[in-house]
Structure formats: structure tokens, C-alpha cells
Image (cartoon, rainbow, N blue to C red; front, side):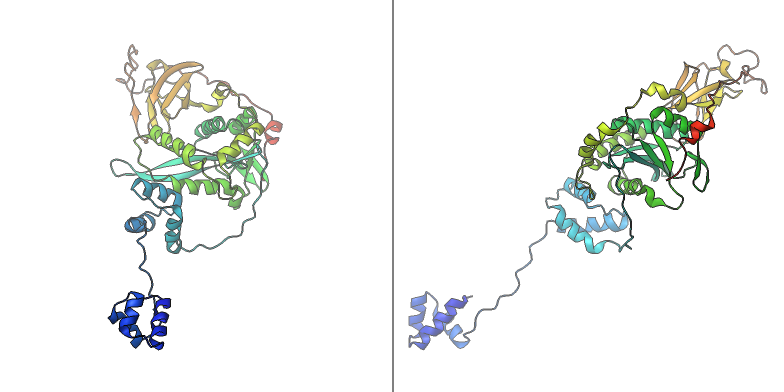
Length: 408
């Protein structure tokens, strides 16, 4: 196809009296081409160029499955998964593809408040269902703490949200952050808040003792004001979108994967609001955090008192853990780590069991009844040991607790 200037030259030479053969020789064209443009001396018309095949094209069926069937819409997460599948494009064309597919959202007006470094952390649990190897529906809980200034995240998956687990997760989060914030904001979870009447909040005494030792002040959100702890609510949603679901062999494996996600993705990304990485802001915030005391300082608050049954088993977290028969009928303290359950008599370690991840288990002990007297399991109704009075519990004045109480 001739360009516009060439067509004009063909017409000009023809009007000057040059024949078809002469025009063809001068312009280096065939005589048929010259005749064609003399019959219809119009400028060429160009149609649209064929569209180049997008680098995303081969992956679009997979993306439709991942978004509409699996409910995964986070572009950064999808980009990581696409790169593992060989995708060589960028995130912009991915976002352009996802934008018209996303379900419409109803905008909500939220007034943000900013917090100085080292002042506040927000805490909550998220529920994460999954199917075990047998296809049964199970669930885990994710303890999530976020520092309000830096948005640095700590995540730990647990099997339940009892107070001992909650306090242990606090210590792990403080260790990860490198210190303790001045206050910790909670939802009105029953583990934390025993009673609420208007602005009057009654916190669990053991939580108050823990807070007193650690140096922070517990605060409770006003009821029906979820936006008061919007940072942790959004963090749980981000955890669900960017990390879950994953394949894991056991709870320690899941928490190892969560730790890698925190280090490589969550705390290393540029935060959408702050336009900075949480890990960089945490470096600034650490100097404003309170120093964390040694873990041994909190040992008495992390353990739970239990009475050993007459069959020399301790009930804990819906499971039964064996102890030597002389402890039957006595009081012991039980503390759980991520992988084990430790049973102590005062400071003396009695036995360590692997922690049951499902309820209804009975974990025996080799030689549990060795040397037991005639009042043994073979003679039901007879105790194996004598009952003694449990350990004393420190009692604090109400003024100490009231100084820590109160909502936002």
C-alpha cells in the first residue's frame, strides 16, 4: 500500500502529462499499481493493528478459577503464584484484568486516627477453617497483634483462645517486636473482659497481673465499635487473603510458614496507607517500646492449675494427660507450648507430653501405675493418692486492678 506522499506524486506526474510507463519508471512502481491509484486517487486508509497477545492470556482461565471459585483477589498474592507458574509479566496488567471482575463494594466512611510510636498495639483472634487428612472439617485460630504506628504484624496459629494461650502469644509477639507497647487494645472477648457496664470494664485478674508485670495497660473497645480496632481487623483480612489457605503437616509447620510470610511478605511490603515498609517503621518504633522482662518472670501466670483425677490423668484443652499415680487427687500446674504440654508440681517438672491438636485424646505414660498400692485402677472407686490443698494465689487490692481498667 502506497503512502499518502507517493499517491500525490503519481497524480501530479499524470497531470503533468507523464504516461503510466514513465510514472512507473520514475517512482519505481509497477504499471498496474500506477493505474490503480490513477483510477482511485485517494489517500490510503489504515485498519486497526492486530492486538498483541498479552503475557497474561494463557493464565486467564486459572485466574478466573482462583478468583471466583477460591475467592482469592489479592493481586500481590496472585502475582507470586503466577510467577511460580512461569508468568513473566508485571502486576499492572494483572490488576487491569482483575478490576472489572471484582465484586462491587459499598464504600464506608471511616475516620482514621494516628498513634505515636510505641503507644498502642491491637489484638484479636481470627478463625481459619480447613480439612484434615481424613477430610473432616477442622479449625484453627490465628492470634494477631499489630503495632498501630508501624503496622508491624505478629501472627501465631493456635488451637484455642484460653487465657494461658493468649498470654503466651503476647510474650511471643513482644519478643518479635523487641519490646512492649504502652497499651493493648482488645475486643470484648470473654477471655479478657469478665464484665462490662457502660464505660466500666472488669478485666480478668490474671490478665491484669500479666499486664502489670509486662508494663502495659489493657483497654477494651466500646461495644459495636469494631472500627476502634480496625487495624487488627484489616490485618486478619489481609492474612486470610494473602496467606490462607496453605498446606501444612502440623501446627509447628504452619507457624514456620506464617513466620516466613511475615518476614518476606507482610512486614516487608510497602504499606498501602503509610507508603513505607512496616519493618522499616518498626526499626524506628523499637526505641519507644518498653523493655520486655525475662520469660521466667511470667511463668506462674502462663500455667493453669488442674486437679489430677483419681485415675492419674489431668484434663486439659479437651484431652487427658497421664501423670505418675502418686499425683492422683493432687493439684498440679499445666502449661502448654506450641508443641508440648508440661505438667509441674510447684517448680518440679513432673512430665512432658506432646500437645494434642484435636480434642478427645488420651495420652498415656509408660509405667504410670508402677508400684501403685492395692487402691489401683483394678479396684474402681479407690483413689490412688491423697488430696492436698492447692497452692496459694496472690491476692491484689481492687485499687491495683481499677488503675488498669477502663475502655476507650
